[in-house]
Length: 117
Image (cartoon, rainbow, N blue to C red):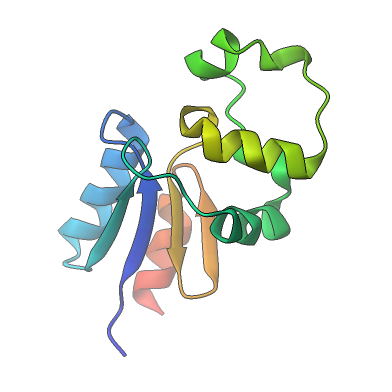
């Protein structure tokens, strides 16, 4: 089996670009999903939510989060997932997946473990 990763993010996200560069420097194939062009599927977001919780997926510092006034929103986990699909710029980026291993945000130490084991 060849080692590859899937990165969900946007081209404008500095952390997403850092993740792409991290894996490119190690010549690891990356399947990049640009959330500005194509939303993550509900199933994919659920996978991250099951491991980290829905709140971990939400970027409370994102401009889009503030524009939508989500700071005071009280939503169920399911409603948050629907919101994250409709508004991907509210997601913490990048979401990185290697098999069953998942990370949210910049996680170079964890990615290094993946590439050395």
